[in-house]
Length: 404
Image (cartoon, rainbow, N blue to C red; front, side, top):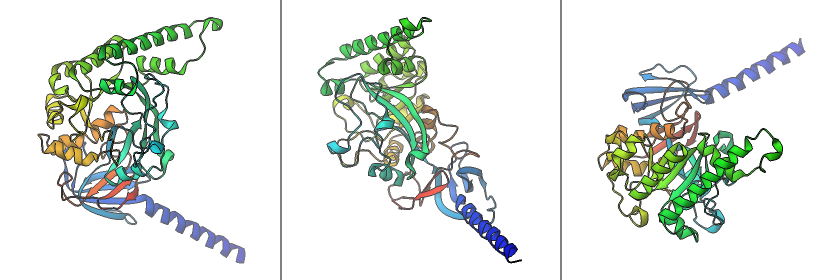
């Protein structure tokens, strides 16, 4: 009898623990306005979260028992930064926390972001508090091929939320390459060097396909990753700001069959027809980037112009020389709204569009059933200066309640 009582007590205790776990995993988010980014905004919307995924979205949904309820004026999907160096670039901008650009050689596509990313870097938490839940992070611009990007959530769980180890190969055309390396010093030389490397990768791939193993070359990581860019395994993120460098990037993509994503693109407003004809998305510089160097002809209105032309455009946080090392994605989108973008276009530029560009729109970027439960809760209009990000959830867990 005593044994049976002990067993019953153990079962009840287990059920209590399970119930507590379910209560933690089950959350209802109520918003006066919910931007799902999969349709029209929902008034008096409710998002039900269970086990890290979105269970249901709708107006005035009944909240089941044992769901913890969070309320907000406005609810949006978690923000997606399509190109950053957060986690490789540290918040303090000192040599010890800067891993995003290696000065050894101008062409190093084999450098993996995965090997340099620090999930405990303070800058990761800083962008998370402002609503950024997914980052395509890695090596920054400044080399002809500086390395790779990886995609990860900004969750405190770190590598447990890794989504893609190698998403893109990062290339740069423009004057910043010459500032970092002895060669190239001109755009023409930079293109010649890149074309030569890509041609070498084509030859390497052909030799590796030889049926006679004795005639195959030794494995070469640089050639492997350049080949991966040409066969569509990886996207090619090319930073180009001057109009002539943007045109060079379009030519390079056509010649070598690259899956091109234009990055930076300060003078893209000069080449709207060419970019649209090439069906190339743009990861645009931060709206408030400083207008000097290759950015000297940038415009606050570029994001709006690209969106109205029908070119997929994402706004990125960028790469800064001052502390902290990344801009606030929300603020950059807000200034784009003040310069011609409407609210939903600007939200798309930091949610659905970057999610599509990095190829993870089936998981993030919008609030839809079965997608990852990444949400941002505001106490007002997201693009008003007086509003704050008050709660951030990643994979159904509250990761920030800073109300910044």
